Length: 153
Image (cartoon, rainbow, N blue to C red; front, top):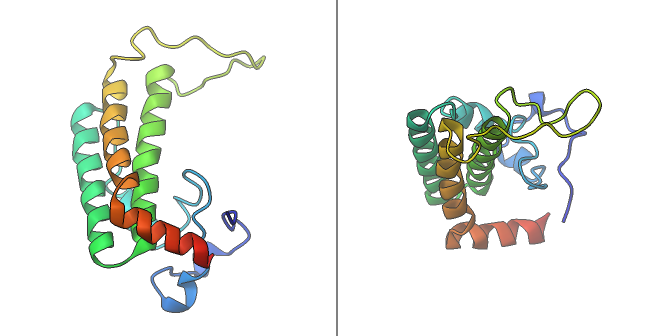
């Protein structure tokens, strides 16, 4: 697996242009999710997880964008949508576990989880994003496209 390219000047790249597309690397997890344009701007405007209602609308919208990118044969767009679904899950879980988003105390020890870490609004929002992320990750067409992209990296 090739690592995500943090050395590139993403402000000058348009990953929808054929001459720039080859530079995209999948990387690990959410790497590059806020860098890769124009996808980041297209998807980020719909990314919300604060409440269950927002999480539901957001995860559904981003998943529908994922499917549209697949229909358009746009692997980078589909992968970026998957990354935003992943990020919705992880960020909502972070705030469900720790209301202020901080896992560690100043001395480096782990702070205790919130009492409602499993049932809070953000925990339920995280479940929505995880469901959609799992649908995206396990989509057959996405897996075929991802494998082909990995082989070409």
